[in-house]
Length: 108
Image (tube, rainbow, N blue to C red; front, side, top):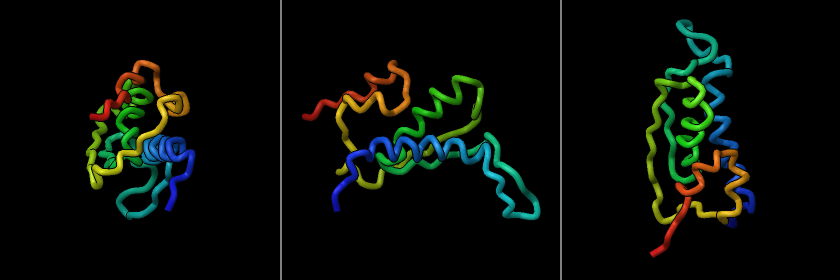
């Protein structure tokens, strides 16, 4: 029932892994297709757990010419729980400092 203290890091790593998976996993699930999906994909991000995925896509991939046609559909299932963490944890997220101001939250 209680959150792990390092959830921000856990879900950050989940987002980064999700971005690597289509490029490297060998998926032999069809007679018409085998190998990695490649970079022509749509990522489905759901709730705060995967909210960093678009940030990583832009800062780590698109800025280097990768995933140029990739898209993200972001779905909010539970707006009541927003996954707020201490602002001092931003450095754990492996994002450029230029993104820091995007994570300011003013309540009320």
